[in-house]
Image (cartoon, rainbow, N blue to C red; front, side):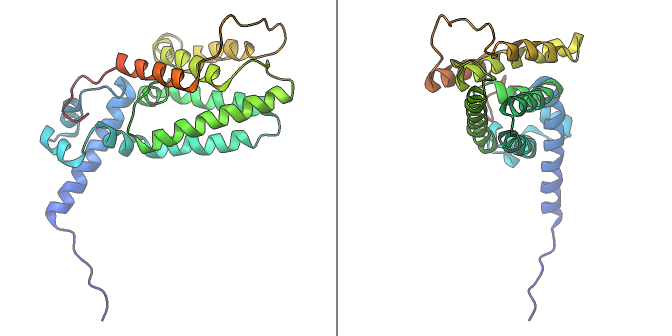
Length: 226
Protein backbone atom coordinates (compact mmCIF):
# COMPACT_ATOMS: atom_id res chain seq x y z
CA UNK A 1 0.00 0.00 0.00
CA UNK A 2 1.45 3.36 -0.98
CA UNK A 3 1.97 6.08 1.56
CA UNK A 4 -0.87 8.55 1.97
CA UNK A 5 -0.05 12.11 0.92
CA UNK A 6 -1.63 14.70 3.18
CA UNK A 7 -3.32 17.58 1.41
CA UNK A 8 -2.40 21.07 2.51
CA UNK A 9 -5.38 22.56 4.32
CA UNK A 10 -6.48 26.19 3.74
CA UNK A 11 -5.26 26.98 7.28
CA UNK A 12 -1.79 25.62 6.54
CA UNK A 13 -1.67 27.50 3.24
CA UNK A 14 -2.61 30.71 5.02
CA UNK A 15 0.06 30.15 7.68
CA UNK A 16 2.75 29.50 5.06
CA UNK A 17 1.68 32.54 3.02
CA UNK A 18 1.68 34.77 6.10
CA UNK A 19 5.15 33.57 7.04
CA UNK A 20 6.48 34.27 3.55
CA UNK A 21 4.90 37.75 3.51
CA UNK A 22 6.40 38.55 6.92
CA UNK A 23 9.88 37.44 5.82
CA UNK A 24 9.62 39.53 2.63
CA UNK A 25 8.41 42.58 4.57
CA UNK A 26 11.12 42.16 7.22
CA UNK A 27 13.83 41.88 4.55
CA UNK A 28 12.67 45.14 2.93
CA UNK A 29 12.43 47.05 6.21
CA UNK A 30 15.68 45.67 7.64
CA UNK A 31 17.53 46.67 4.46
CA UNK A 32 16.34 50.27 4.84
CA UNK A 33 16.13 50.72 8.62
CA UNK A 34 18.25 48.03 10.25
CA UNK A 35 17.21 45.17 12.51
CA UNK A 36 15.95 47.42 15.31
CA UNK A 37 12.94 48.39 13.19
CA UNK A 38 9.65 47.99 15.12
CA UNK A 39 8.09 44.58 14.62
CA UNK A 40 4.65 46.17 14.31
CA UNK A 41 5.91 48.03 11.22
CA UNK A 42 6.90 44.70 9.68
CA UNK A 43 3.45 43.26 10.34
CA UNK A 44 1.81 46.30 8.72
CA UNK A 45 4.10 46.07 5.66
CA UNK A 46 3.15 42.39 5.33
CA UNK A 47 -0.56 43.21 5.58
CA UNK A 48 -1.16 41.05 8.66
CA UNK A 49 -1.91 41.73 12.30
CA UNK A 50 0.86 41.93 14.89
CA UNK A 51 -0.56 38.83 16.60
CA UNK A 52 0.09 36.86 13.42
CA UNK A 53 3.75 37.86 13.48
CA UNK A 54 4.09 36.80 17.11
CA UNK A 55 2.48 33.42 16.30
CA UNK A 56 4.79 32.76 13.35
CA UNK A 57 8.04 33.80 15.09
CA UNK A 58 8.90 33.19 18.72
CA UNK A 59 11.16 36.25 18.89
CA UNK A 60 13.12 38.84 16.97
CA UNK A 61 16.12 36.51 16.71
CA UNK A 62 14.01 33.83 14.99
CA UNK A 63 12.74 36.36 12.44
CA UNK A 64 16.29 37.59 11.80
CA UNK A 65 17.43 34.01 11.22
CA UNK A 66 14.63 33.45 8.70
CA UNK A 67 15.49 36.67 6.82
CA UNK A 68 19.29 36.54 6.83
CA UNK A 69 20.19 32.86 7.23
CA UNK A 70 20.99 32.27 3.55
CA UNK A 71 23.01 35.47 3.07
CA UNK A 72 25.03 34.78 6.22
CA UNK A 73 25.85 31.31 4.92
CA UNK A 74 27.07 32.96 1.69
CA UNK A 75 29.55 34.95 3.79
CA UNK A 76 30.74 31.71 5.41
CA UNK A 77 31.55 30.37 1.95
CA UNK A 78 33.41 33.60 1.14
CA UNK A 79 35.48 33.11 4.30
CA UNK A 80 36.47 29.62 3.19
CA UNK A 81 37.54 30.95 -0.22
CA UNK A 82 39.60 33.72 1.38
CA UNK A 83 41.50 31.29 3.62
CA UNK A 84 42.47 29.21 0.59
CA UNK A 85 44.18 32.13 -1.20
CA UNK A 86 47.95 31.47 -1.62
CA UNK A 87 48.69 35.16 -1.03
CA UNK A 88 47.23 35.96 2.40
CA UNK A 89 47.14 39.72 1.80
CA UNK A 90 45.14 39.29 -1.40
CA UNK A 91 42.79 36.88 0.38
CA UNK A 92 42.32 39.31 3.28
CA UNK A 93 41.64 42.37 1.15
CA UNK A 94 39.26 40.53 -1.19
CA UNK A 95 37.32 39.14 1.78
CA UNK A 96 37.00 42.53 3.47
CA UNK A 97 35.95 44.25 0.25
CA UNK A 98 33.21 41.65 -0.16
CA UNK A 99 32.05 42.13 3.43
CA UNK A 100 32.01 45.91 3.19
CA UNK A 101 30.10 45.75 -0.08
CA UNK A 102 27.36 43.93 1.84
CA UNK A 103 27.52 46.39 4.76
CA UNK A 104 27.04 49.29 2.36
CA UNK A 105 24.16 47.68 0.48
CA UNK A 106 22.09 46.34 3.38
CA UNK A 107 21.52 48.13 6.69
CA UNK A 108 20.24 44.91 8.28
CA UNK A 109 23.36 42.94 7.41
CA UNK A 110 25.41 45.86 8.71
CA UNK A 111 23.65 45.68 12.09
CA UNK A 112 24.20 41.94 12.32
CA UNK A 113 27.91 42.07 11.55
CA UNK A 114 28.89 45.16 13.56
CA UNK A 115 26.97 44.69 16.82
CA UNK A 116 26.61 41.98 19.44
CA UNK A 117 23.13 40.69 18.56
CA UNK A 118 22.65 37.33 20.27
CA UNK A 119 20.60 34.18 19.66
CA UNK A 120 20.78 33.93 15.85
CA UNK A 121 22.39 30.54 15.00
CA UNK A 122 23.71 31.56 11.56
CA UNK A 123 25.13 34.77 13.01
CA UNK A 124 26.80 32.94 15.91
CA UNK A 125 28.45 30.60 13.38
CA UNK A 126 29.48 33.57 11.24
CA UNK A 127 31.17 35.34 14.15
CA UNK A 128 33.26 32.26 14.91
CA UNK A 129 34.15 31.78 11.24
CA UNK A 130 34.91 35.48 10.73
CA UNK A 131 37.31 35.52 13.70
CA UNK A 132 38.96 32.33 12.47
CA UNK A 133 39.33 33.71 8.94
CA UNK A 134 40.85 37.01 10.04
CA UNK A 135 43.18 35.30 12.50
CA UNK A 136 44.41 32.78 9.92
CA UNK A 137 44.89 35.40 7.20
CA UNK A 138 46.62 37.88 9.53
CA UNK A 139 49.06 35.26 10.80
CA UNK A 140 49.86 34.06 7.30
CA UNK A 141 50.22 37.63 6.02
CA UNK A 142 52.60 38.37 8.91
CA UNK A 143 54.67 35.31 8.02
CA UNK A 144 54.73 36.51 4.41
CA UNK A 145 55.92 39.96 5.52
CA UNK A 146 52.76 41.75 4.35
CA UNK A 147 51.30 42.79 7.74
CA UNK A 148 52.87 44.41 10.80
CA UNK A 149 53.75 41.87 13.51
CA UNK A 150 51.77 43.44 16.37
CA UNK A 151 48.33 43.42 14.67
CA UNK A 152 45.76 40.94 16.01
CA UNK A 153 42.41 39.62 14.82
CA UNK A 154 40.77 41.52 17.70
CA UNK A 155 42.37 44.76 16.46
CA UNK A 156 40.95 44.20 13.01
CA UNK A 157 37.48 43.15 14.21
CA UNK A 158 37.20 46.28 16.36
CA UNK A 159 38.33 48.57 13.54
CA UNK A 160 36.00 46.88 11.06
CA UNK A 161 33.01 47.23 13.41
CA UNK A 162 33.77 50.92 14.01
CA UNK A 163 34.17 51.66 10.30
CA UNK A 164 31.24 49.46 9.38
CA UNK A 165 28.85 51.42 11.60
CA UNK A 166 29.68 54.59 9.62
CA UNK A 167 29.10 53.00 6.22
CA UNK A 168 25.28 53.42 5.97
CA UNK A 169 25.56 57.16 6.61
CA UNK A 170 28.34 57.68 4.10
CA UNK A 171 26.59 55.77 1.31
CA UNK A 172 23.78 58.35 1.23
CA UNK A 173 26.18 61.07 0.08
CA UNK A 174 28.88 58.96 -1.58
CA UNK A 175 27.97 55.29 -2.21
CA UNK A 176 31.58 54.14 -2.73
CA UNK A 177 33.25 56.23 0.00
CA UNK A 178 33.71 53.10 2.12
CA UNK A 179 36.35 51.87 -0.35
CA UNK A 180 38.57 54.86 0.48
CA UNK A 181 38.32 54.34 4.24
CA UNK A 182 38.78 50.60 4.04
CA UNK A 183 41.94 51.22 1.98
CA UNK A 184 43.23 53.64 4.63
CA UNK A 185 42.51 51.06 7.34
CA UNK A 186 44.32 48.35 5.42
CA UNK A 187 47.32 50.62 4.83
CA UNK A 188 47.61 50.88 8.60
CA UNK A 189 48.25 47.12 8.74
CA UNK A 190 51.28 47.33 6.47
CA UNK A 191 54.70 46.90 8.10
CA UNK A 192 56.32 49.80 6.26
CA UNK A 193 56.58 52.78 8.60
CA UNK A 194 54.81 51.01 11.48
CA UNK A 195 55.34 52.59 14.90
CA UNK A 196 54.92 50.93 18.32
CA UNK A 197 51.28 50.99 19.43
CA UNK A 198 50.51 52.89 22.68
CA UNK A 199 48.10 50.31 24.17
CA UNK A 200 47.62 46.53 23.97
CA UNK A 201 45.08 44.82 21.76
CA UNK A 202 41.64 44.06 23.17
CA UNK A 203 41.17 40.54 24.47
CA UNK A 204 38.40 38.40 23.02
CA UNK A 205 36.27 39.09 26.11
CA UNK A 206 36.82 42.85 25.85
CA UNK A 207 35.96 42.81 22.16
CA UNK A 208 32.72 40.93 22.88
CA UNK A 209 31.75 43.48 25.52
CA UNK A 210 32.42 46.35 23.11
CA UNK A 211 30.26 44.75 20.42
CA UNK A 212 27.42 44.26 22.89
CA UNK A 213 27.55 47.96 23.70
CA UNK A 214 27.21 48.75 20.01
CA UNK A 215 24.13 46.51 19.95
CA UNK A 216 22.62 48.28 22.98
CA UNK A 217 23.09 51.61 21.23
CA UNK A 218 20.65 50.31 18.58
CA UNK A 219 18.21 48.61 20.99
CA UNK A 220 14.95 47.45 19.37
CA UNK A 221 12.17 49.98 19.75
CA UNK A 222 9.54 47.39 20.64
CA UNK A 223 10.12 44.59 23.10
CA UNK A 224 7.15 42.33 22.40
CA UNK A 225 9.10 39.76 20.35
CA UNK A 226 12.72 40.42 21.30
